[in-house]
Image (cartoon, rainbow, N blue to C red; front, side):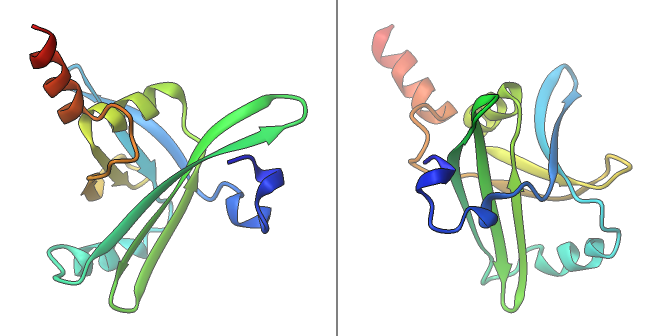
Amino acid sequence: MPLDKMPDSEQFIPTHKSTILHTKGKPVACIIDQNPQNKLRYEKMLNHPDLKASLIGFLNKAEDLGLFMGFKLKIQADDDFFEYTVYPNDEFIETVIFDEIIYIIDEKLENLFSLRIITDQFVKTKSEFDKFQKMIT
């Protein structure tokens, strides 16, 4: 959805950067959290029974540069709440679609938290792609 159609475009200003790390030759989609105090907050959320997460993709239209794809990731457990607005590159988007996982890392590239993305919003998640491959062979 273009920002000019959104009632409050301030909600879609980028808050975090993303990167792709390669582990054993495989790309891994990562959001960088530069706040070192958040490490303890992530540890409290691990295995929390009331953990909720949502991922919403959107398009942002810039006059000079055209369309950008971004997403808003929200994580909540009880009263603790994280929200990320990110404009990743194409490799990041492809990695999330096929691996269905997002990692949150710190500045030292250490893993703080990870989420499995279970959604029907993507046209081709890896599991859907695998099913499609089996159907055509």
